[in-house]
Image (tube, rainbow, N blue to C red):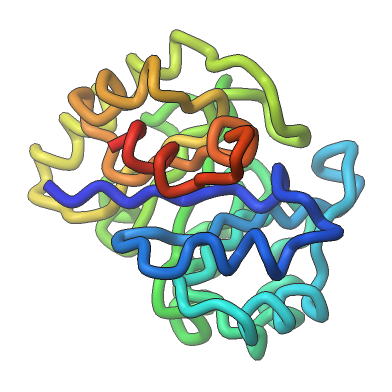
Length: 217
């Protein structure tokens, strides 16, 4: 099974962002994870379309955007020309999920749903699971990097994996928050296929990010 590692740029050195991005050249099965925050859905502000366009110009890896925003419908339009590979929206921020997914799929190659730690997997009807490419399970409370993994989220991975098998689906199970070499293998064994890791990757003292990615695998 191929496991994608998605370093979260929220933990990168923003003053050396281009150099940091170049350190991932040659890495396979790697996405660059971008946390888009609006200061409303979560108490923080991060990247906008201009920054993402600049990132796209200096890297070849797929851009994986996680929108922690109160108005994801508007963000569909704002970011459609940035070159994103994946657009993940929060289940809790959308009312008409089916309609939103249909629109998003016309603009982005991959569309994902994110669930906060307290939102049960059963909230998503099986027929909607068939329409998306990724389910992101937050294993910390969204808004800030560097938090510790919430152990109970492991049960959600197992539950989601059972639903995936039961309905013969192929969506990725992505985990975001507190992912390190200490828990990565257990997460993969439970069913995770895509690991977001920010602090663990970017805290490598010699900036040998490839070594940290290898440890996660």
